[in-house]
Length: 455
Image (cartoon, rainbow, N blue to C red; front, top):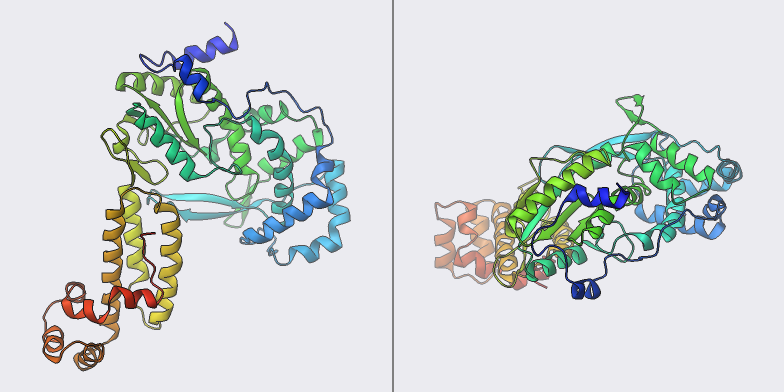
């Protein structure tokens, strides 16, 4: 049986309505570049990596990204001076194929959904520079060959574009989603399988040796360096490109079957017309990922369901003829949890400091989740945030005498001010009272720097 026939048999038929009609194929490209792939004829990639302009661009990017020091303690700020003194030796080791990366420093950060921790591997500042220089060369060659349905870690592509693509499939009648979650993908990538994909695209042996060295450099954890025989440590510039290369096999399989899908890094959703078709696709994908790529599917987090029951990149979609983008419940819960943390009563935090912290967080959050199509949700969140802020004012005003003075000084008549100060209710209840809403108007809070979530 040929390789393509095997691939088709792994997934099975998409069921009625899953294979696109000829007109669909013409209207919707299946790949960014349909030209056949072949190993690069250039075996001088390392010379491209070491070109002055490429290195200058890489250094600029590494400095802009900042980041913590690696195992050697060198900061990004100290890197330029180090390079001026040592680059001749470093450059020679790259060109000779003898460069040896240092182990990465293990850092654990909580996952946004509260489901454990995400393990990052922080390379040294020098290794980040080398990885960035390699990335810039390889990405120019590889990115045009990746699928048009892949959006993560690619120049000119964004999570918003991925969400909009998914929304388009749902509105076109693909009302079931195969939501695939890969268990610890970045930690489980098989090095031999990955390097075989790398070797099929480049022929510079020095580059192959360098990439393998980055994969096997080891991890410093609890004072000990452990070997890394699988995985692409998150934290280095090169890891996202290698992950896209690894999952390009999955993209090509889905394209060959004519399935509608959107992938952002290891988050992949396939959109089909029926639950039965979705179950067939899910079974085929599990077999392909575990058999061909040696990856593990997270059974607990993967499902075939209606799109409104699943989240994709922080969004979900309403039901009905026109699927609207909505903020996923878990994203809303994380938002409120973060605002509660920022607005806790803490000594030494002035209103000005509080507003600055809220402004940074709210502006960034709005930049991403403002993409939703439910302005009423943003309005409710605005009102909730303002109530939290009014609570802080009320608490910082302290005793009854000072609260009465603050209210009357802000134009509240003495009787209403006295009633509010004498109320037995707690700060949260009072934050919605007429006195506090008039004393601390929306306009006034805005003048202090509190942004609105509605654009």
